[in-house]
Length: 150
Ligand code: ASC
Image (tube, rainbow, N blue to C red; front, side, top):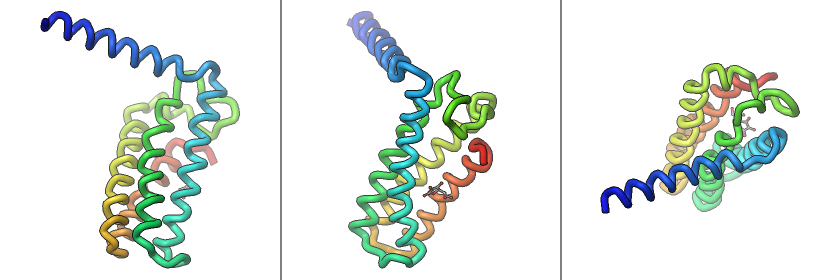
């Protein structure tokens, strides 16, 4: 039984690995995918920023909806930074692949901060929301400063 479970786990892991590899037929597909994710993220983050900066009145429900979308999208772009996609229609710096641990760390930071942002939006506390938005946007900026070409 143990052996069977182990075999299933190995098959499962192989399958997941294979499907992740096969996700993009061409390098430009991976680039298009991650840029699309960032475009959507920026749109929803922009709505949150407007509230954080007081250009639009704070509304917990709208903020929560947008923060949830940001937190979901924050899971997506990273798998599309596949080898061989540091050139083409992209601002991604080759440092992403040279210091991949740092890049992954930044990606994890954004995901963690955006989850906190959802909680802060839900709480209805505007100050908590502003603080959490600042941390989320800050994690975007840190990564852009190091890994995105101007
Ligand atoms: C956005 C967006 C970015 C980040 C960045 C945060 O909405 O398009 O690039 O947030 O401005 O500092």
